[in-house]
Length: 307
Image 1 (cartoon, rainbow, N blue to C red):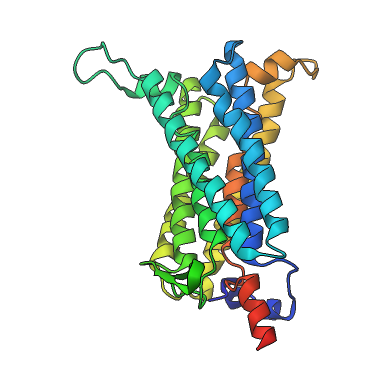
Image 2 (tube, rainbow, N blue to C red):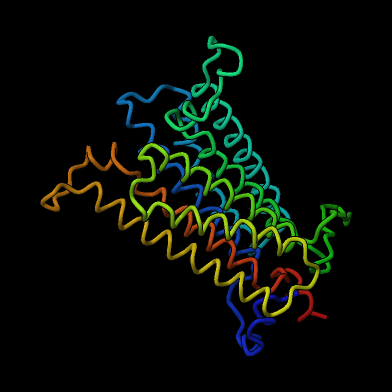
């Protein structure tokens, strides 16, 4: 179901140069690169980056470049590109889960009294437990985009050798569910980060409210087999709020890191309000908007024309 066309039927007159799958993989590649940069800045706070902390810093940009190369290979051999991209994206999931585990272990207090090994206060002031999970989310939506769904919205993925894998959800509904989980992770990370300031600034309630709203509407969309125009309109509004929240948050974080005279000091940007963190809201919003595009992959479009 082409959700964007349901909301605005004239959109069917226009044909994007890339399919939804291709745009999803491009977004995944960009995410991998910027995740590596973001983690480098975060790990630089301690002044010394230990060996295992280099894993996501190196893996992110390398994975992003390999995904871009896979996109070029797909122009000649989609199956080869799919296998290459799948290996990289599975690795991204592993990196994300391991990162979350290492952050949780550092935030915990194993020698503490029973019931106090892990507390909200430890999670607030410890390494961001949910931050590394973005690697896993990127891996999940990238894997979904890498494999052709034939026919669209059937949940049936075309596998090598002419085989098919039937999934319980269509690719579009699975995307909505992934979006909801990514939005939830983003808003929880924001809440834990902002809890250090006791939410004294009223602006801090904006990402919390918008994030919760987007999480709920995303999950609601995943439950619908055929959402109507009103449902899609509310969803698009939520995506717009996520994009706006990301932009406003970035401006506020930059302003907070500047000196009173508006001067740039690198140390303040590294140890102050994380510059790239608010853009996670915009990033998740962009992912959410791509879900609404035509579900047919470029492979099926070529086959339709050939037939």
